[in-house]
Length: 165
Image (cartoon, rainbow, N blue to C red; front, side):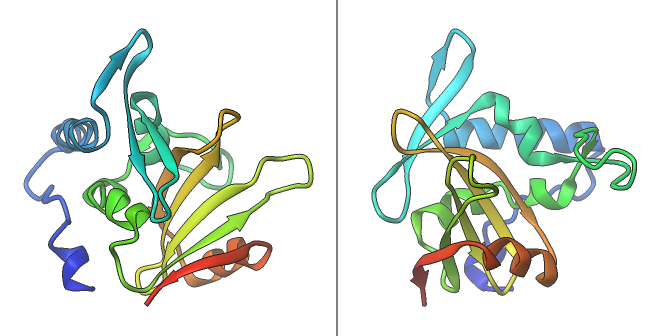
């Protein structure tokens, strides 16, 4: 693992899942939000090319939980994922373009869907997804470690427009 990434890992060792979830939530709020709205905390940061990316408190569960059963409930978000959580600090560094070996792709799931941005840290198969906002800019959606096959599948239909060597 790249030293710049390993130094950003959140240490969750010795914590219960509940304690780890609480710590990760606090870190997510601290790093990515800075103002309260009627629906919760939000914050705006910038991408590597100066585009705004908005982080919402309510994306925490989507970003840091996964399913207990990928076969029968592939889209459920019912299990806290410690691997995702330990990488909470990676999200900002990746999106800002600070991590070597990162590429950014425009990806469209279907002809009717909006374009998404996918940041990929190839050495780690770490993915950060941003959804397009109707008002312009991006909204943080999720971030997780995948395998090579899944990562290639997601980038195959996209267009790479930026790489950090």
